[in-house]
Length: 448
Image (tube, rainbow, N blue to C red; front, side, top):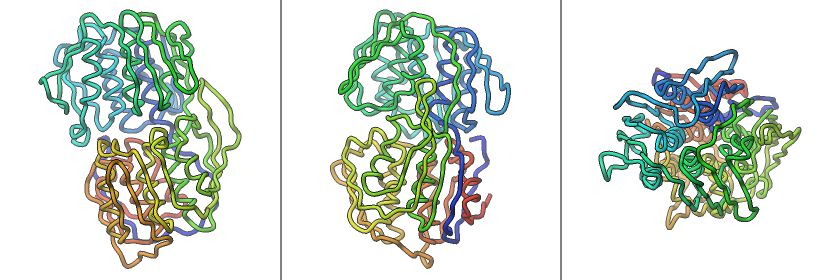
């Protein structure tokens, strides 16, 4: 981590507010802009970059692979592309992905079909606990090999394919795996074909769309993506919008905080990223998207939120694919709504930075909020508005930014005396989180 470890301690409920804010830039697009810029031709420019730990890990890995990256202004970077198949580092060089599963899977995709790669791969303690079985199995189909055989957690060694050939792949809910296949296919012989029933994040496709001879996308109900391998990529010129996942936490706070209003400016509103907002709007949340515009195939705009009375949540499996990162904060909202909320198809939450189902259940239980998890379905038995000023919440060091952020909001909405360890992990995605919270009136102290 770029930050020293620290704990956040919260004592008080937040008061009503009416504010305008801007959230941190989109992490998914920031990481992809560097990875794709590195294998494109000439110089790519990425503006309004999220300078978080995960993005800094991306820059550090690419520099080890021979990519020149210069900061040329405030949140602005120039990426000197080496071209397709040109990344290289000395044998047994170690790449450290830090906390970023996105970086790990996408860069493994690129490296698997890049010639003459023999590298060691690792991450922080949290990433080491996460299984890489799916990405290893996929990249093995392109001809890459991983050692030790049968081991699916970092540290690992990768040896790239000597003769990468395009594959056919039926995508599931993971945008990271889909993106890894796309990126591997760029430098494979022949064509790589991906069929997609559940439309996961499509930032990789959007960035590549200016290369119309390289990527072809067809279909509405079932999307088919075709990658034509071995062709040069055009340089990128991206201005990155605010992160809708980061904005979701401030949205949740406003919805549940009485007599409050919030305008969040310049947020990415890609249809594959707004499942959280759609789900809550269906339950009565006053959320409106305004000032919409399209740039580089991405929709952006302002989010207007007003505190609302929300009905208990019924989230079918289809919502999970477009709101994965927001489920911990959805559990918080469900706990503060009267009635039983149901979340289906959430098994994958157990393989995030922590087991997010188990950890959120533990946190909610500290406020006597009951929940159950069975057959991929979470039920939360919401108690309605809670005054928990005589209760305490303790969150251990989990290395999970979304758990930290969700616990923070649960605390300031209920008044529970809260101690959240390992809070520096929030810098992986939202380094401005505490600063924005302070501007909204949250009271907290930092203990180092």
